[in-house]
Length: 79
Image (cartoon, rainbow, N blue to C red; front, side, top):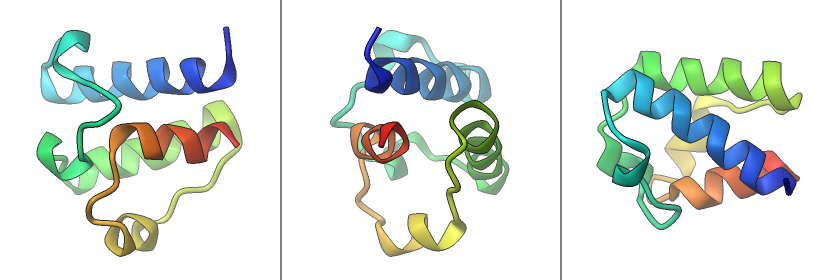
């Protein structure tokens, strides 16, 4: 499995658990703001990124990119 797919699956699984969604509800083109993530959800994303992929996400990254999509987030984590 390619790195992007691993990241995408892990991030989607976390979001689905947090927001009681199905995987089919999500797509790479979906803007993160559309998911109505709260501060705890963003902290969970940051922890997941660090633990699973050794990547550091910051609140500033999300603030600076309000139109970031789920796919863009996963692309940056896969690098």
